[in-house]
Image 1 (cartoon, rainbow, N blue to C red):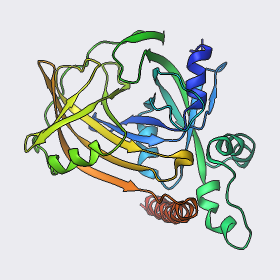
Image 2 (image 1 turned 60 degrees about the horizontal axis):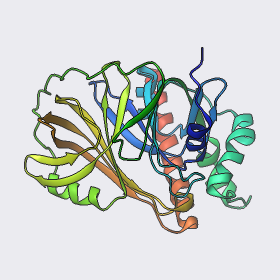
Image 3 (image 1 turned 120 degrees about the vertical axis):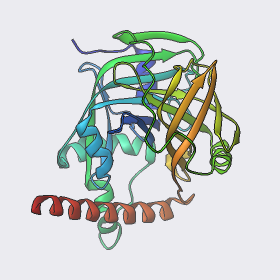
Length: 314
């Protein structure tokens, strides 16, 4: 039977402009990134969805290899709900293989306009410039296995669960061959994360589904970044992802910092050692933002097609 959810949870899933997506890496870690699900869900079927560009091939490859993902609905600003709960949806993702024009026009377009406003149109320039950004997108449908609802955005108290019960704490993982120490500047990374409105940690749970937890960035030094969380973190060491992001209405002026690294939890103290660092800051002007999105979509799709062609020749 599909896992379904009540009206108050549906208000959040259907009303949040952005959510945190976590998926599993081949090494057993988790990557967490921000997506705009624009209210895509089918409560009767027990599914939620988001869309992504065909140019983001690495993410799609990883989800195809391991479909266990999580969506954390954690931020109410600029959406359509003022509820306080944190909602974590875990399930198995199925990316479409090709863009479906009917889906894009009849399902995605009206939902996106509700959150983002009307799209830029114009045959002389905008239709061609944004072709890849608007049309070369595919839906990723998640068959829900579990929904956890916490009473507030800090996840201090688990309110209710729909679907299977939690599998408990995951075991500690084997340390990477290159060691667990930071490989990027922890002090600089912490400073950048503190400047953003939302910071979330992701790791793989005992049942193989990612967990997403809101955290607070504390002091940082050569050994890593100290994190604080209202929700209990599993003891031991493990690979983990960290995301910091901020956004404005219609996702104009959004900013994000992403890390993968090693999390060590001991006696309720959490130390995060960042191993990779990436990020971006989008223009605060909508026209400039769409110009940048169009360029990135074209570059990403060309790169994906070159990779597909090289794979076909081997």
